[in-house]
Amino acid sequence: MKSHSVVRTAFLTVILLTAGSAANGEAASAPAPEALARPLLQQADSARHFDRGNTLHANGDLDGAIAEFRSAISQRPNYPEAHVGLGIALAQKGELDEAIAEFRTAISQRPSFPLAHYNLGVALDEKGNHEGAIAEYRTAISQRRNYPDAHVSLGRALDDKGDHDGAIAEFRTAISQRQNYPLAHYNLGVALYYKGHLDEAIGEYRTAISQQPNYAEAHDNLGSALNDKGDHDGAISEYRTAISQRPNHPQTHYNLGIALDAKGDHDGAIAEFRTAISQQQDFPGAHVDLGIALRAKGDLDGAIAEFRTAIKQRLNFPQAHYDLGVVLAAKGQLDEAIAEFRTAISQRPNYPAAQSALDKTLATKNKSRR
Image 1 (cartoon, helix red, strand yellow):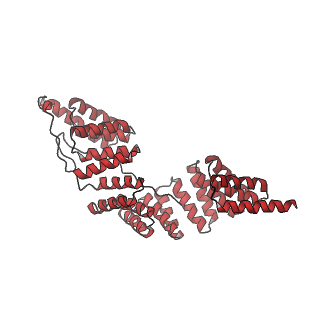
Image 2 (spheres, rainbow, N blue to C red; image 1 turned 135 degrees about the horizontal axis):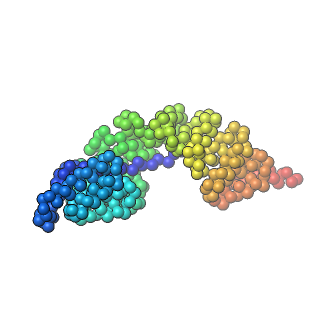
């Protein structure tokens, strides 16, 4: 079964038409006292660089945007909007440490700047600093109470920490602030799924899809929830829709293979597992399930090859050793089977199926000696 994952919120783009304009209802920053003494022409030049930076960023030219934001800052160092714009562009290039520094500079220049706190939270989240991110999201929300994006990101960070109840509350708040918000419904579905509330999760995934039909992640996770409910046909339909929207996604092909196998369509499952592996060669779980499907079709040698590949890709993989042992025992290779069962048990001491198989294989071997 697919493990559900929360979609990360993208960095918000700061759109400020002029040096002194406001974004998202935030007050524009007052120029520093020393800036008042600068020539008005220099102030206008910094604003033009800033506006060009926004335009280039909107057109996807991150390097150009970075250069323009830096030019704006060089002419007007106390320019929090430009520091945020620069931080966003740097973050989107993967330069998170530099981005964090820019967001912090913006905050030092204007402490009450929710957009800066929000984007700092996103950057910290990307760095794995969930506690720091949570603190920044909460600060952003305290400064701008109607901030659905910050509530979603806070919910995602709480979910990452295992606080599903807290996450659910944040996602619901985001939805109350912006009803047509598929990302929030999707993430709420994920949190509800983790809590075991499958029916509610299914409802949220369906709402997300109704608001954004071309939402492959929601179709994929809806399929997984339906599969858990035993609705394999519904799951297969959702996985196929997700694949039509996002063909090169090995996890979805793998999920479809699992659902097809549960329906007894081993040939269809084998095809999907092979597609998943072709798209992601280091995919031990897919190799194991492909091996199981091949075993069901009577292709024991093919199954053995897949189980061995899975073990090469993940050395500590008790299920693969167990499944390999089962096929080896079926082929009469009892000593090798016994070794695999023992390895499986050494990696997972509480493994009743492997212990039972080991006991039976040892008994069969002892009988053959008599």
